[in-house]
Length: 369
Image (cartoon, rainbow, N blue to C red; front, top):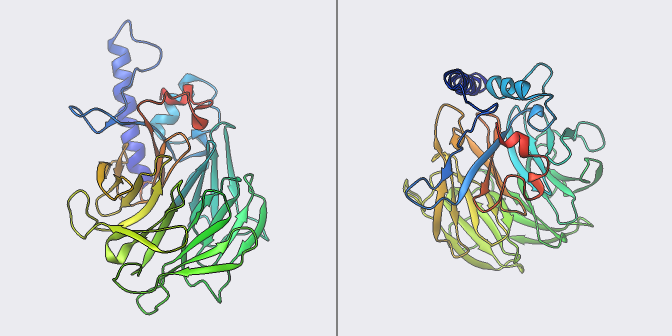
């Protein structure tokens, strides 16, 4: 059903585009399409929709303009591979890594290299239920597997390197986050209604040694109720989505509590079902809310700056039904996953050209679609 809705939307868009060309004798060879910007007018725009990643064809080279137009309209071509149930996303130097719980693997959309690579399909690094994902400054890829109850580590090309944690420690590892210098790994253990294991574990990212346990089940500062995902800002602050308490908590590099923001509600700045979280190079915090169908952007003090997206049934840009993971790359591009529509939407700052940054390499032709 999600594929059908998305394909229908793209088909309508393509049909309108063809009619436009037919009605204009001086129409250009390719459409001058205006992508949506956020926030909308009359406010000054800060982000612009750039593209969507769903299929292998989204990064692999299309042979002609006509083929690219058909690919956009129909969503895929024969032989194309696709996301089935994406959850987490992490980006490093133009490589977009996405966990897929249904296919039991990680997909790498290598934008500069024009490649679509599957990771975690073979032993000894075979995945069962990959959830959270992060990439260290060294380029190592960390994936939490909720069924295996450990974290698997790969190099940037997907070669298995080692594992961290075990079933004696981890119960439901749903997320991973690596600190800026790549030495510490934070693993969010979500726990459940019948267990007190609601923690964030801190491991040595290289040796796998358990260094610290942050939090326990509760509602006080520094306590968790179903902690879900985590992210680390450039200054080393750890941010954790405390889903059951409808808030985000921040911890200093030594593990001590710093601050919390968010309350339950249905208005901007509040949370209904917070899920994914990321930080940008300036230290702002991005929080996905599945119930709202959007992500909200906060400053480091927890003050709301803006939000992007809304619930929708079309699969169009910034329309979401089950948004999950989110990440922000080195250049400020935002990548947000929607499980229902099986996609990753990409937004870039308005001051960044389509051909700039790591993800801008080789993107010029793709960005016109």
